[in-house]
Amino acid sequence: MNLFIRPDGTAQCLYTEDINLGQLGALDIRRASHVEPEKNGNWVADLRPVGGPVMTGFPSRSAALDAEAEWLNREMTQRNVTSEETTAFT
Image (cartoon, rainbow, N blue to C red; front, side):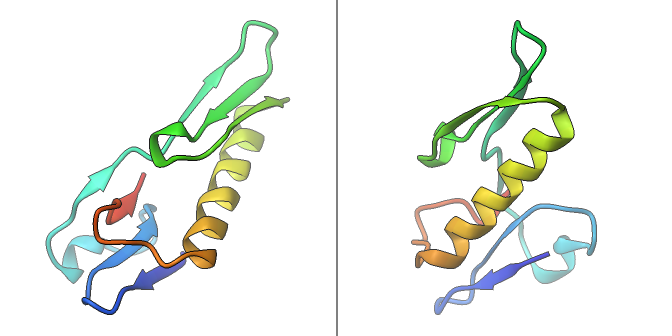
């Protein structure tokens, strides 16, 4: 798990149950994307809820989830996330 701490003391991460995030303080958990099946049997990761792309053509749900997590972690690493954005991505 990558946990990003901002200068104002708030944190942001891709939610997992690796650690009990509630022990860090109050949580604001929001959906970052939607991973859904396509009619052709492939899977799509729609990251528009956080201003991201729609990634299609994954052969399995787990492949779409992996791509989703990679994109979210890369975005959180590459930019200084503002306090208006989510505290924890789920």
